[in-house]
Image (cartoon, rainbow, N blue to C red; front, side, top):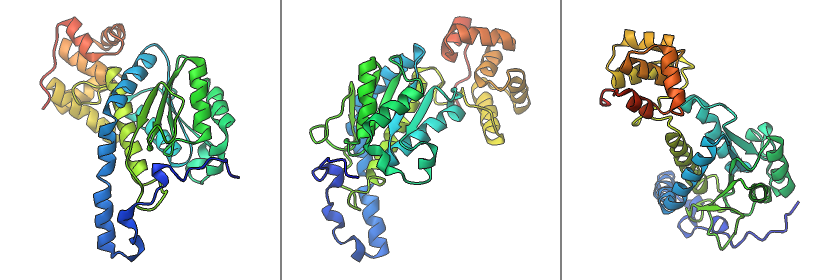
Length: 310
């Protein structure tokens, strides 16, 4: 069913003259053209640096005060939000409810297209309300073309409740205004395959979400230097990474790293603080809790320091 919205003027729907003869190109020419055009998402993200910075700070404030971050979208945009949310718990040991991806059509839409659901403005509102979305939370509404009713409904709800309402789109604001407090525009240009926003627009969106979630977690104290000191030690690969972090930052050998991880229950932060201060696991935990989880603050309070990163 048509939504009645004329999207023909949108940047993401325009034909790209560079690919006018796409089906006539040799395979090597086609690949080369994609390589050249795929530099544009980087430029698009760089062009939105100020808005991304503002969004990181705004989201971090909400989360530090007990709120949560929600990504909302349909189709490729929504799937990218779900992907970014799903990566936060293993990378930053964050509870699954802290960063949530809400996709039109729910879990089945991850594997099977349900793009028709994007036309429901009420659907975006209801899906958020069913997750318990409140004015304490932050919402990033993702819509490559900027017109998705499902996303507009969610952003309007966020504004009504007093939540942080952040829009992310790949068209200029004057082509598709979105209700929001922070407006992130990733202008990656017309797609090589006209209208296929899983291409450059999707790449730019993924890059922006990488920056957004990582920046927020850095602000929440889940990173020390460039190490993921809140990594979830949930498999052999991540256990090996945790041991290497301890070896590099605390200057301990592999055996001592394994011992510290065991007594700390797999908490890299606690293990690092124990190594630097000589305190036991309960004391390290108490010190971290008193510093809102910031390892750097806990070290400063204890008058201790870690080795320089190797």
